[in-house]
Structures are given as structure tokens and as C-alpha cells.
Image (cartoon, helix red, strand yellow):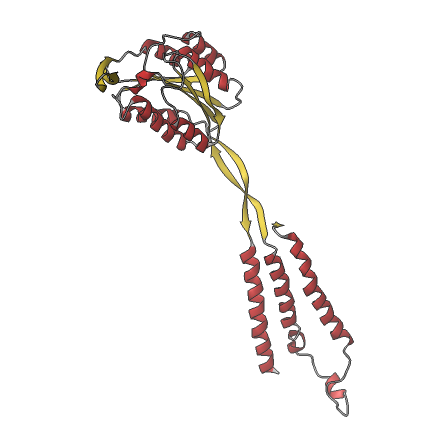
Length: 327
């Protein structure tokens, strides 16, 4: 137990001094209160409980003062420790932000759907560290591994297609994500790689990046985003933006190879619902739960001491009334 205002404990000197003064008066006050011709009948009379009970109201009053001082000093207990289950997982989102992610086979488009569902996934895993890597013709880290959910979600909302040179450098995106977590000591390290195209740019071969991930024990879950066949895509024309159907080209053999080679899994998302189900399935698979002690749970004891002080005062009042009637 500790006190929020320990300096107030000096006030305990007041009831202690009052108690000392009461004892001193009881010992030194020898003045007679009743004059009688002989003392024999008084000295031989048995002592009743009333002789001792007359001190109890004073003891109750001093106790009430002590308890009141302790109460206003705000005692708190930190003896309890809350057990918390934590996932112990580091997750990096490697997201394709090439212009093809603006296709409208998802609502409202592929990139917006991917962002919204990723934000929902982030919100449901408060114990994990997460980061964001974006890639198109090149790649960079938008957010390093962090447990700051507010910052992570805000940065995810800011992801857009014009951040970097256009193209699809899957190898660069994967390699950057691996670099972000290669020094992590988490029990489980995961990359969720989401793309809607074919690797056509970048200095790093996707297969080589997958081998590096495997070396560091990082699992890669790959998600191919796009409807089967063709998808509507907004195209700027002299008459404004118009929708044109373009073929959906996803290098599924490459994505399957990356996933299988690192102990992950490949998924194909053809609409918002399917993408949401994929994230939910990844969430169920990645649960390495461990029980750890969290920070102590502080309990305010003010009410306990204040209530005890009140009960002492009530007992004093009732006992004094009782003694007056008996005497």
C-alpha cells in the first residue's frame, strides 16, 4: 500500500497528541468529585464494566481521527497484478499502391477496400506490433513496427496511389518488409503481401526476397486482389473520367510460390467480402498466445478508510448516549 499524498500523514500527530493528553489527565486528575464521611463502602464496591466502558467513546473518537487522516492521504493498493494474454506477433503490411489498385471491381475501389479491411484487422489485434510498407515501381516504409494503433490507422488511411513511381515491384516491396522485421525478437513474424498485378519493376527478384524471408523465419501470406476476367478501371478521356474494362492479370504462381516457400499461404480476393474473410482467416491462424504480467492494478482504498471513520464516529455517539442512560 502507498499514499498519493503522504505528506498529509503528519496530521496523525493530532489524534496521537489528543490521546496522550487524555491519558495524562486520567492519571494526574486526583481532585475529588464527591465528599463522603467514610471511603469503606466505596473502596469495597466491585468495579462494573461501566468503569472501563467510559474510555471506549474516546478511543473510538481517536480511531476515527486516525482513519480520517489516512483516508485523505488517499491510500492505494498495488498488490494485485493483472494477467493479460498477448499475441506476441509482429505483422507488416506490404501493400501494392500501383494505379491498377484503383480498379472498381471492389467497392469503392481495390485500394480503398484493402485499406478499410486492413484497418479493421489492426483494430482487432491490440497486442501486436504492426508496420506498413507500400510499393509500386519502388518501395518504402510508411510506418515501422509499432503498437501505436492511432498512428498506424491514420497512416493507413493516408495510403494512396500517387505516393511513388508507378509499376509493380513485388520483390522490392517484400524485401523492404523483411528488412523492417529481420531484427525482431517476436515469437511470430508475418508479412501480409497484397498485390493485384505482375512483377514488372524493381531491382530485387521476388523469389530472392522470399528466400531472405524464409532465412529469417518470416511467414508471408500473399493476397491476389482482383475479380476474375476483367475489371472496370477509371480512365481520363477528353470527356472526363470514364470506365473501361481491363484484363485482371495476377501472377498467382509467383504469389503461391512466395507463400508456400515461407510457410504462409496464398489467397485470392475477388470482392470486399472475400478480402474481409481472408484477413479473418489470417487472424485465426496467427495466434501465438502467451500469458504475461501487465502493470499492477491500482485500487483506491479511500472509501474503505472513510467508511471505517464514519462507523467509529457513529459508534461513539451511540455509546455515549447509552452510558448517559445507564449512569
